[in-house]
Image 1 (spheres, rainbow, N blue to C red):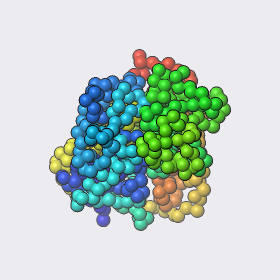
Image 2 (cartoon, rainbow, N blue to C red; image 1 turned 30 degrees about the horizontal axis):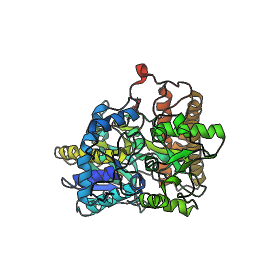
Image 3 (cartoon, helix red, strand yellow; image 1 turned 90 degrees about the vertical axis):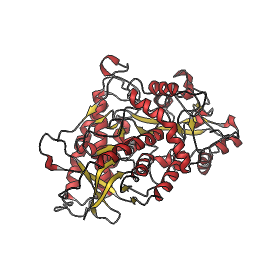
Image 4 (cartoon, helix red, strand yellow; image 1 turned 60 degrees about the vertical axis):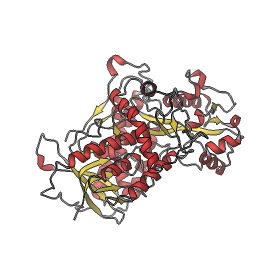
Length: 529
């Protein structure tokens, strides 16, 4: 028998938990998480949440900073909604028990990051995401209507195929591989994708292992519109160390005065942007990439030594302790850093309430394309987006489920056919590695038409290999993730190949100028079913 709920939420980060908490007032909620419910991009968010919380700041300034970072592709309505509703969502978080740093006066200790004209980043030390997630999980645990299913990997969306040709099929839920190894049906009156990003599509990333683009891939296969996948943000500063896996060095370090230097100690950011180290992330990442290619060095260095040990240990305790564990004392020596894939600015196209073009299917948070980020995300707008759109989608979902009747017929159970257990797991490992390497080398910070063409040809072959493997052998989590990163990689290449200009996070040597006349528009792709 299938699992039935009013609201089915895929993902346990800030967006999914925010929605679940609101939705629990209106019906039963299932939250599916691919690993432990604490594991996801939200938990690794260091910097903070951008919002207008100071009397010297204004909504208009936050809006303008977001638009400037987004290089002309932001949707103004999405930016205004996010910025103006942000302070109330943060006040709700505080009411739930989230603990943010404050000054002796009791006011929030606001910091500044790249692209911001004001100090408006609320933070909890350098583990803000972890604190936000803790508060939301505690609140969800107090709601009897919310059930968590951990270590449960969604495979594909279940669509109502009875609608017939030419009619959009309603999403009824998902097939998912459970912790016990069974493939079961999870049905919801509404299904919400809150699956986060896809950093693992690249060889070097700040993201945890769960970030394999599952939501985008499943939605695309179901006929949902996807947009702007060419805009993948590379965080300028991840720790460069052979034993450090995906450890982010927060932009807040530069916000507090950190300086980027070459191996010889020379600063370089002033040559690339008037804001120096506080330039938008796309500018800083390209600058570091250019300097590494020019010098042949393995990394650049982020220098915090002039700020003093006491300040560093108090403001960045987690980063300090992690660096120290790798024998880097950031109080007396610069931190070696390199860019790494960080944030997906495109995604599943939605309206201002998270609705996609597939009936019954919503998308919120990093998996969604609301138009907020445009061609480049402004630092610390991501947790804010999850809070705002989790709240907005919950309200409209609650209205929708009141108008729906229960299904008269159950969707069919998963059919394994003649699939057998695989004895060729090396195929999965090899293809996974090849996709990530070719994306890093051909579809990274700087692109060309020739590199994109090479990537496209190889991805087409890999998709055929993976499709054959998927249907011949029993489904495992590794196969699910491999299939999805290949799908997402292909979408990134497709969108990047269409955009014949350089804008924001998409920089191509073949079209180095920004062309507003032809390309001030989203790159939208959709699979025809």
